[in-house]
Length: 110
Image (cartoon, rainbow, N blue to C red):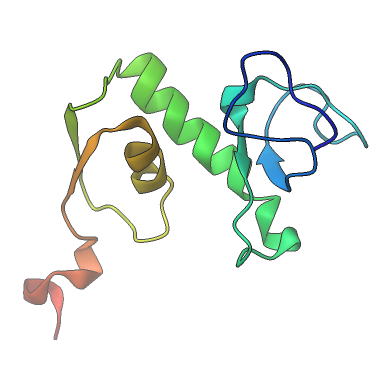
């Protein structure tokens, strides 16, 4: 990240981030702060390019369409362990609830 706008307190210039926004495939892009998150040190940069689309989709579905607010909960049926919704939930203060994917249910095992 080269610079941050006024009012952005959780990110700093020099942070490695993953983000999604108009023009994000260019060398430099200006994106809303809510679409950028600090890239975990354990995340490979090649893998990091897949994260923004999943997180943004989950965030849009839960915050904008679902209108969830901090402290509210949502049940995700057949949630996969690598899905983006748990990350969005913890960041937004939602209470995650889920049912396991079908393959994980004991009744489905042979």
